[in-house]
Length: 396
Image 1 (cartoon, one colour):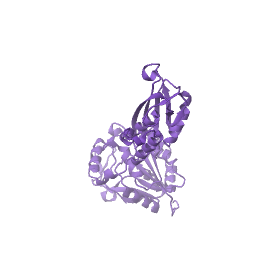
Image 2 (cartoon, helix red, strand yellow; image 1 turned 120 degrees about the vertical axis):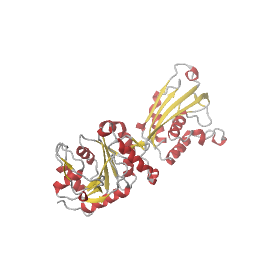
Image 3 (tube, rainbow, N blue to C red; image 1 turned 60 degrees about the vertical axis):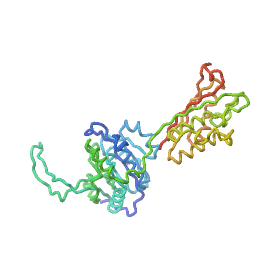
Image 4 (cartoon, rainbow, N blue to C red; image 1 turned 90 degrees about the vertical axis):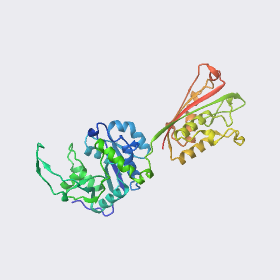
């Protein structure tokens, strides 16, 4: 028997989403449910509960490569799923903080779990070491013969329950479970191993809404529950990646400083404009505003406002950041392409990139700056104007 820790530390969650979804005909974690990938609903239930200092998501190799960076940006750690559920749990458990006293393990295909159930399971685990949510069986259960041709017996339904997740454990208990689980052997859930250890899991009465989406019919049932769930629209969204595109052009004239990305570039001409004419910051800000459907910079700084004459585009960028913050959006990366025949901008890539990163409060590694010429064609090719294109992605 394991020694009981009277004061377990904080809680962390592991969500296992590496299954193949064979019965669904495709990988179920990213199937659409009520307009969003199912796994987003599942993760959201844990990240918005306020009960966990860390949420760890185990994903299959393809999904880890495709979606892992976005989850990490959203504050959800990721781990590679293994060949079995137990191996996935081992991989994810390696990321659990040393100080975490309680660990919740949940199926990624149970998107309707709610905070009260999660809390009840954590409290029970803190009390007795392990807690498993379950519901009474509705149907009579019979044992079939080895070949499945006939029934052999009828167990007493009153003594049986259908178990669910999250299954919650004190850290020492789940460590012992993983140590006792045979290498290469898989279990439908971790509580199966408890009997080997002489530990009885506490029962937490759950709800029939906490279904596991396993078959196509389950999607219909889950969506029906969600339509009936008044609080579903109030639940916090897991941030998703969005992209925006920006464009700007200004004429090159004598007697004006050339400002690009917030820094002055030595040149005989500068960009004419209502502001300082910084095409880089203008296109970047329009891309950022576009990514959150918040218009463009002219909405906030109209060219008809004479008090804004000569305004620094850094001020425009600061306002753009305020709008992003109000929309709970965070910048992922910015990609800028400048079209200019003169001056040659390649020597200035680093300075412009660092300046844009500093203004937008980003890492320089998340900002890309490059320039192209028009090979002498048109106004740009004749050195009469500079154009800038920008693409920005955010999490919102």
